[in-house]
Length: 235
Image (cartoon, rainbow, N blue to C red; front, side, top):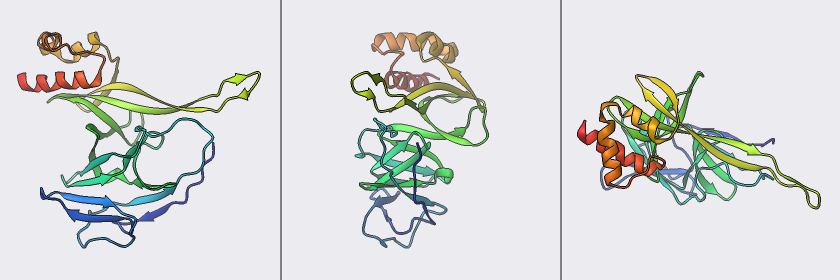
């Protein structure tokens, strides 16, 4: 499917984003449709593009979240944090976007960001698996020597043919795989109890007991996150 995007590259947060200081002293910027409202202080090298969404006959969505009522925090390599509203993750582009109108989004050039948190999901930049370049992966759990990562992918499922209705619409499908990052290396892993216990190494028995005591599942992200929190306490 061909999509036409009108891209406008903008340097250092001009036109559509207003920057301010929050109560905690951190840097904050909010989307605004009142053009031209930009404060004197701006995040360095934070360019973005305005992308107009082309109509699509494909069912489903290429965005990770069903709606845009999401608030995210972007953290740069210099540990500066910026707050963004209406944030979503475009799985097809591997990019974070913010909706500014019914038919357009801001596509953030996140090359200068090291971490993004949205709806309690923590994403970080990692080396692409068997490729040159970088990509975002969700951090399911993180310890001193390794991390458990989740990589989202977008595919298109072909519409089913019906003798009475003809061929149905194609559909976006978001899938994911898990990886372990250790010593700069990323290795695929099956998200199941036996594989997860292996990565916990000498602490596996303690993690197993903790999971049993708290009725945690090795097949749920939120439960595995709790296991990592416990791991960091006992390490």
